[in-house]
Image 1 (cartoon, rainbow, N blue to C red):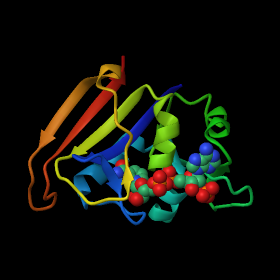
Image 2: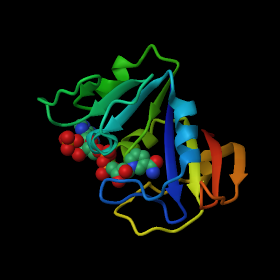
Image 3: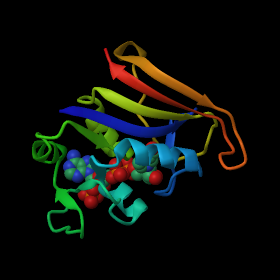
Length: 161
Ligand SMILES: NC(=O)c1ccc[n+]([C@@H]2O[C@H](COP(=O)([O-])OP(=O)(O)OC[C@H]3O[C@@H](n4cnc5c(N)ncnc54)[C@H](OP(=O)(O)O)[C@@H]3O)[C@@H](O)[C@H]2O)c1
């Protein structure tokens, strides 16, 4: 099974504030949907609350320490290892955040679908620093700001060396 991370990160490694995203980038939401549709997504309980519902056309898995949490349309597990065991027959599984879950997953992930948002934001949630020697960029697409997506951004894929 390939364990992949999907994340959008600003220039100062920010990913969120007040349990929300920091930007409105419809192009990135579309990219996220195309990347993850038809697959399994794993997220932390706070990210699930931020989204507010299971995402359609995907197997939704939420990780929490609360053994009583039950969510409709979602599989709930009390740890990452448990969640990954349940996914062992899948070809590729997508870790979609947030910071706590990325921190656990980064050790095991072999691929990162990275959106770099070329702006700096005040934030309370950050992605861990990536070790450049551990990753090779295998695809990259740069986009300039325009009316609907008012900041520059880059989609890339990183593969673990
Ligand atoms: N830019 C992006 O691409 C992106 C993507 C996703 C999220 N975000 C942002 O990230 C922020 C949320 O991130 P976050 O770090 O605060 O929260 P999070 O990682 O989404 O969720 C944290 C929660 O996950 C559960 N958890 C974490 N580790 C666990 C473990 N080892 N075992 C069992 N449960 C565990 C706990 O839930 P309980 O408290 O229920 O036990 C913990 O409170 C928001 O601002 C969101 O918008 C950004």
